[in-house]
Image (tube, rainbow, N blue to C red; front, side):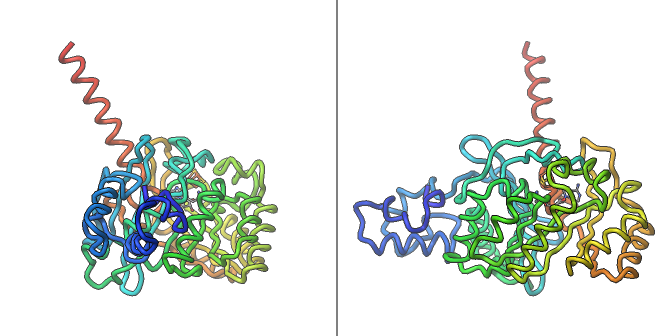
Length: 358
Ligand code: SAH
Ligand code: SF4
């Protein structure tokens, strides 16, 4: 499994071959990724055949497009059955790839589909980086009109809490920056507020962007939405983010999923604006994507407008983010819904079948 092997150790996969073969393999994996080993044209046939089916550390279970072809979504499945979701969003001057750091998530945020389905396991560095390589290979094989033919930006906003998996995530970041040539400033780690993880990220050599999923501006409300707040409260999270900003000089973003009747009030907007001003942070607001296991809904358009207006009146920098790929349930961070629903349907059908036959 080449992607599960560190680039420096690829030679171990080809023990009987000259050294330059592993450099060629590294080129096809990390610099100019291809979908299929048969496309690794300068490698001899016997090596391509040996790599063959083992090229990717997962199989492709779902491959969908939306937004007139500008959004692509994949559901990958590892050999041990873990699901990995990845979304590519194309724009005129950039492509943003939303990747997963864990299969499932243990944090249990009430409004999040991933949280509602629980934790499967950490993803290995190779499984994280292979999502980037797969999207890059897909873009080269089938470019999107009017969109750069490479992955320019990567956000850890798929499934999982990246800072709960520092081993896998930090090594994946190293490979993206040092081997794939993606700029640190084009990578964003999104965290629910894993305080020790933020300090560890500040200690790494890479100045990646940090997004903090805040969602509530007082501890009572935040603990209801984000159980981890009980362990690391808003004060501790803001202090860690402030440390990160001081060390890296990269502006922090605060993420806020607007939930009707919950965190969409003027009071919350004022408190959020004060936190953002103190951190010199940018606020990204997204209207909640409804999930199957929760009755939470996004506010109406007028409430969203008024929330945004209060943030700006209070002197905060804020953007209302679009929910790309909604027609395929692929808004970043929300990739699981359709697949879980269809799994349930399939299981129901199987059960039906069993009854028919019985
Ligand atoms: N665990 C990390 C990163 C993955 S979640 C984190 O929580 O930051 C990526 C983003 O999607 C987070 O900002 C998260 O709050 C947001 N999100 C989760 N569920 C959502 C939903 N139902 N609607 C809108 N955004 C959601
Ligand atoms: Fe996990 Fe992030 Fe979802 Fe919370 S919002 S359950 S931390 S993926």
